[in-house]
Image (cartoon, rainbow, N blue to C red; front, side, top):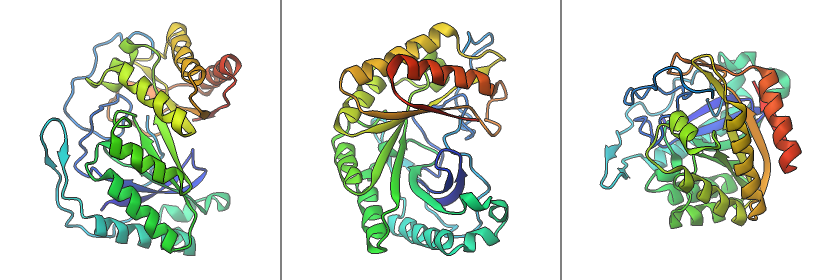
Length: 302
């Protein structure tokens, strides 16, 4: 199954997710991620003060159960056998279920509050970084064509760790995305290289992430998503939050268009047991300080 409906805190309704990596391969291994990748050793305590991008509800058991696996490609790439036509069929079926209300006859969606029983967006996200998918442009193009054929101007969101935003085909896809009621939600969970490495657990340089966010936001307005948690009972330090705010301020000063920042914490148990949610008052403090120093609106989610 490539397509899944979720009740999303940040979309404030039903978000229909698209998973291009059902094998759970990703170039990040974030400490707060709910996907148990079982590859990288966690940091040892103490973690030095320091998830989830959508609150997922259990998936409906439907669709094609014989999805072919992804296989490794060369130079860190992925050769994919994802069936795009199958993906589009699943997407159409799921969109129909939400729009007609049939989705809300199935548990746990039958418990969805009335004010959230609407389709908020289609989100290209899933268990791996979508911009590293070799046919990302084609997927975005085909999703747009399908939703346009349904006379539906529903928002199409790409949720990204920003590592692949510098690729030409990805840039082309984002141009197409923004021409068709699309938006990028870019993750930024740190202000310093040291903290970034401990949270994201990747070999991709932090400077690359900042550069990719800056370049993309100069081209198109974006939303930044930041997940803060307690790691071994310690939240991010005052100094780290100060560095984080400086990074966002610098992006804006260089011409980056940041519409607002979503500041949140893990809402479901992450795969790493040493990660726990950051209290609401600490999230609010970060959001208030960010808005005061940058002028960029911030919203918290707990």
